[in-house]
Length: 298
Image (cartoon, one colour):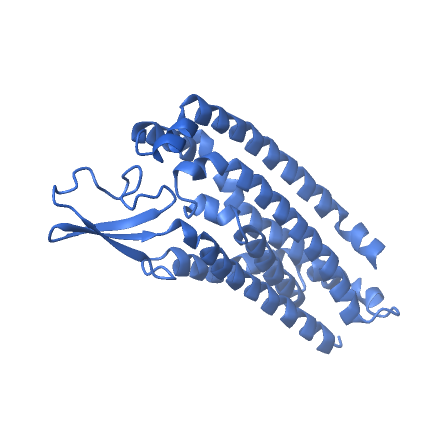
């Protein structure tokens, strides 16, 4: 089974390795440039001396330079890779067997069909997890300097670090496997899985980044006897006094500022919620596929 699974999926494994190498080359090139600029702008000394309050202009310039334009090109593949890779790997796993009729040979051997599927899923899923962990480690290194002077809860880092990248990859993979079993067609399964993926992924993004935010944003009241000139959502450092916080809104109430924000410490809470939802999707889809395959007789 292991040898057969490798033979069937070695092209996908080689493609994943090539994709990781290309992503690593881009991340290392941009990451070294980012680190050189971080040092040449004097940000390490400023952060050590004043926590960023002494160099707001340098911080703003650095963040703008490496979160926009060509320097942010890495964000696009990091967002697109999980869904497309999960679908491309997952759809043929059962869809190709059923479409080409090779299931007649595979399911009539001494290996029961459920064990056959579990073995294939275990090996392929393990490879995807390994790929996801490697990409997460790479992007964590890449975003390191940027996260010292901005929020880790921004869309780019929060989608590529922690648990989200690997969990979303497995979620797309699970839906594609189930679509392949139901449709018995590889291309059709890819299309169906992509459409099906848009619904839960939109729900997760709405829960974590929508107007309501879950968990709810923290609130801080800041006395402003002098009116707090210059205080705003994009102030550097944030009006909360911590560079890692993400300020959502500021309102005036009497002589105070009422600040709604996401604390930097909430990063792993958001990751566990988002990653858990994606893993729930993956487990539900794969569990349903195993159950249906066990019951299917023709």
